[in-house]
Amino acid sequence: MIVKKPRILMVDDDPVNLKLLEKILDPREFDVARAVDGQQAMDKTSLENFDLILLDVMMPRLDGFEVTRRLRKDPRTRLTPIVLLTALRETRDRVTGIEAGCDDFISKPFDVNEVLARVRALLKISYYRSLLNEKEKFEYVVDHISEGIVVLARDLSISSINARATAYFGLAKPENAKLDFLDLLQGTFQTDHPGALKELLLSKPGSFHLIRPGSGSQEPLILAVRSNPVRNLEQEIDHIALVITDVTEEHDAAFRKQAFIRLIAQKIESPLAVLDGYLAVLEKGQWGPLSDKVKLGLAACRVKSSELQAITTKLARFTGSLGWQRSPSDGILDLTAYFRLKKDTWPLEFQKADFQFSVQPRTRVRVFRDYFDLVLTHLVENAVKFNPREIGRISVSVRKKNGKVEVAVRDDGRGMPKEFQKKVLEPFFQIDGGNGPVTGLGLGLAIAARMARQYGGELKLSSQKDKGTAVRLVLPAA
Image 1 (tube, rainbow, N blue to C red):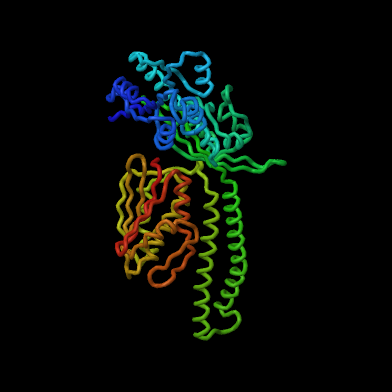
Image 2 (tube, rainbow, N blue to C red):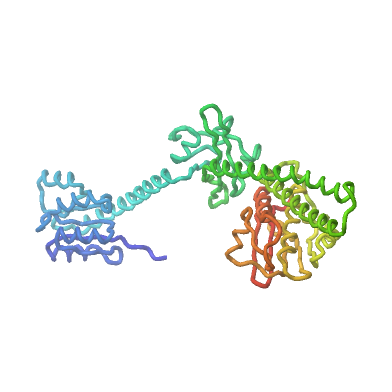
């Protein structure tokens, strides 16, 4: 490892003194630079950073006192140690140097041991000052960023908190008192991990929400929290860092969107039910005999009515997925048994597909079966719908690795442009199937991604042109 040598600026109008100082300051230990007067010293410090400045007092143009004053006013050099080199013995001269802001004096003629001792001591001061300066900068940045920062000790007491987080929790900075983070939440904030928050904080990186309901003059507040335990060399948790973001407006917008979508679905369902009723009456011939053309028209109406019904069902499922939460009653789903059943039912349901299954035995996940079934049906439906082949090949594989279960649905369709591969995970984003627009609302992958996140997993998508698409649902193994 290369160790950076301390950078020292020597300032003296006497070349003999500069040469002597260079001999004292071993180039193997120090990196030295020269300046022959005060103005040149100012020019050099404006361009370079130095760890220490050795500054002669008696110089033309600018003397050492004035240079010191100017260096102390410059934010770049305000903390750089300055040693005045002087033959002056009067107390008032030394007082002038101290008032200007110097850190020490070295008397002329130079004593080698004195110079080295003072230089090494002041370089230590320079190092600690730089640390203090960086700490002040860091604390300023942390205090003024838009997110809340909280650092918890191993016992979950608050050891550090920035201004933003202080405002979120309505408290003053805990300078001396140790506040327990869980006690702070008690009675004020609800969480989406009731009873399990301590375990989450002390286990691995995770995320959760803190919700403060509105009451009286207090506005509701929803905080998204990302937690990250930091471990020491013995792999024990040393502290936990929390990054907190106010997502109240986002949740309000999502709620309004959910309410609007639900309203649209309900508005469609009502006239659709009336339409289906009239179609049933007509199809039964209760209002008179039907010609072949009328029967054909009614059949077409029935198809479109079914499509509308499917749309309202998907809208209802999407708004329902916005409220999905993990629950202890979700149960454990045995994927081996689940896909044994699907081997028989999916080929009948999706006749445009040739299915291949590869399921690792004894793979289980903790998930609500209805949610999982809805998501997998969407993934298979997409693989069939966006495949221009007459009979598309779909492979479904299940494997377990490193505590995770991956359920992958792959097809041999035309693939997806790279610029769409993130957008398709957003609600209502739809692309055509190669032969013009396809039916649907663009909700399948959005619902799948939401369900995966709710259960501590993720949805991954990869696609290549003319080589098909693979969607991987990754969930924690049970």
